Length: 112
Length: 115
Image (cartoon, rainbow over all chains, first blue to last red; front, side):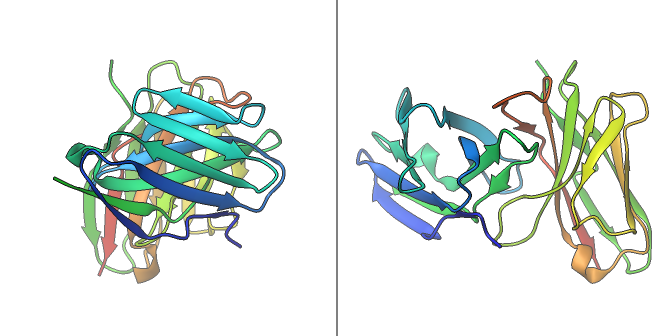
């Protein structure tokens, strides 16, 4: 049972524009959410996180939004750069657990 | 600052052979995790250690899989009698203490191909 879902397998965006990656979850116990970025043949690299007590967290060009009532989070990248082209995974964890649950990933391509 | 390292990076083996992977976590990280990632999927949790104690195992970790972290530093993951379905990327991650809302940092992974 997939508790974290990324329904868009791929996304293409022009350089300089905004990239919006979406993630939905089903487990209401999740209270910590992260985005990881993954290049081919490398492990996931931590990008940004958000606690359930917040609805927004910003770090440079990256902003994560959390809508707890909708069980939805999104990652905004502004402006998008060609180096942002990678697979992005959202992940979630619950205070009662110790593992992260990952989505299936969205492959972002930023076109120069 | 060295991150999580994993060896080997790639392993090709024949079905029925045993393989062992090693993970060196970030120095002084007490928590170490193993995940498996197959094509088109996100990483799936296998097991984790708090220092040398293995505290949780996923149902994905069959009896052919065993993990150790003997001195609370590096960890090994062994797969006995490999099957073609074991072909995947095996990822290791570590975190400082294993506390509330703590980020896990991943290594580059070991890609296993079972022929």
